[in-house]
Structure formats: C-alpha cells, structure tokens
Image (cartoon, rainbow, N blue to C red; front, side, top):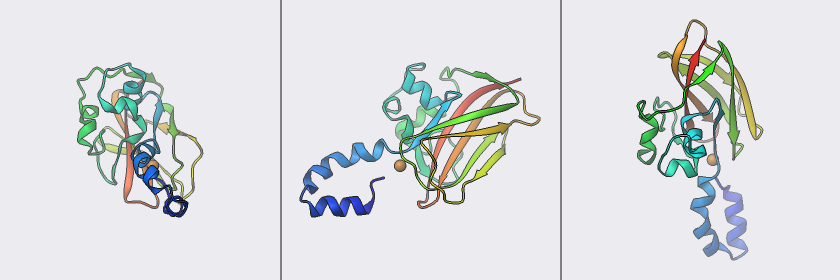
Length: 171
Ligand SMILES: [Cu+2]
C-alpha cells in the first residue's frame, strides 16, 4: 500500500493527477507470496501452469484475515482454489523451509501454516517489519504424503492477510 504520507506529499507537489493514474498498479505490486516450494501463484507466474491475471501479480492474493481459501476470497483468482488444475507437487522432507518473497515489507503480526485440517506452525513477529525474503522451518509432524499447505501472512496494521497454497508430498 502507498502510505498516506506519500500521497499527501505528492498532492502537495501538484502531481496528484499522475498519481491517480499510477496508484492501482503500484498497490497491486506491493505484497508477497511463497516462492519455494513453488506456491500455486508462483507456478502461475512461472508459467508452470497456465493461469489468468494472477500470473502477473502472484504477490496480490490479499483478503480479510481468517479465510481458509487459496484465493483469499478474490473472485479474479478463484482458479487458485481448483485442486484439479494440475499444480506441480514438490517432494519435501518432514521439516521443510518455506520461503516468502515480499514486494512490500508490511508490519507483521503472525505467519501461519495449515495442513491436514489443522494449524501446523505459527511464527509471531510482534508487529516487526520483515526483510524482502522470509524463511520459516515448518515441521509436518505426523502428516505425510500429499498435502495442500495453506500459508497465511497476517498484517499487523490492516485487517488483511496474504494467502498462498503450496502443494507438497511429505516423505
Ligand atoms: Cu501490500
């Protein structure tokens, strides 16, 4: 998101009309997603699977906190919810590193990972601003075989979260 301060400065400088045109693209580019193991939106962006508009902005799967859908409730990205779309399944070990690529370093409350119908990991950043990449070690415990992991990035200073589904095979 563009800050209100930046907006105020821009208006003060008399470039408000230009900003009004460029703002949608700017805010769409400013979030994050899981790059590895490749999430569904990362596979769209890489052309591994053919997708609609999500391929241009894999970082934009933003929705209200508390959802459990891969699309974060975005109708335009509904194909991310389709388990039969041919997503590449990444073989992983019981403890696996999940890597986020952030295009905006939003203040963060928690990172959550769900699989097998329950939460398998949570990391509390206490409102801190993350780096451009973030890595978490996630342990699958007793879960094995094919799993659809739902990862959630909860933003500290907005009601929103970012969502990413990752298809893995745990062995
Ligand atoms: Cu953002």
